[in-house]
Length: 229
Image 1: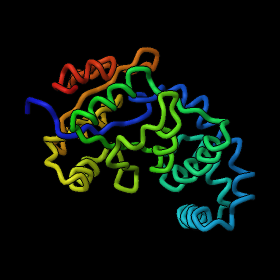
Image 2 (image 1 turned 120 degrees about the vertical axis):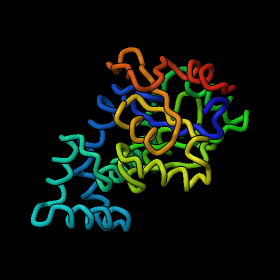
Image 3 (image 1 turned 135 degrees about the vertical axis):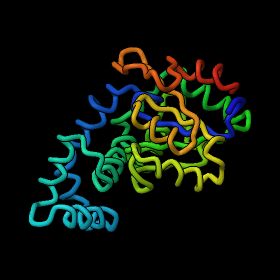
């Protein structure tokens, strides 16, 4: 399909946000804060529900030990990601965390939104984490630009069914959606579901350009390739 897509669905890590920020800032912050956060908020309804889910997934083991193991393995496990999002929310609210995005991202997202292109996010990080990140960028609060936020509750990012489900949620034919990611297997899954794809190969992130998907360096090149504002 040629011409402008009706919607852009974007990944975060390595696409809008440097991988280093996620692995050197966000992950260590969550790990260091996790024990105290659980002690302070274990009776909170949302946290209690997450802990129940962790216990069900790893019975007979202390939830904290399970969560720390998942953290150290960078496991894409939904209850862990939801808990990280809650911890990061505290960090952003306190001014301890400040979201890092690539310098080309905010202006292009605003231009696409102003030009009538629908925007959505799909990340392994929880919806809460996504909203907190885009809500606390140096370029301002960008959350209002997005009409949808999707995480692993809708399915894994390397599963084509996840992208079909997102297309259904957006009420758009898959071919009208452009998916942006730095990870080739995610792009493969999106393409198998009928979405259009583009790989972001960001300088300094170590991403290897795919030979199966269009690879570009920034959102400006995405705009040029797909007739976007």
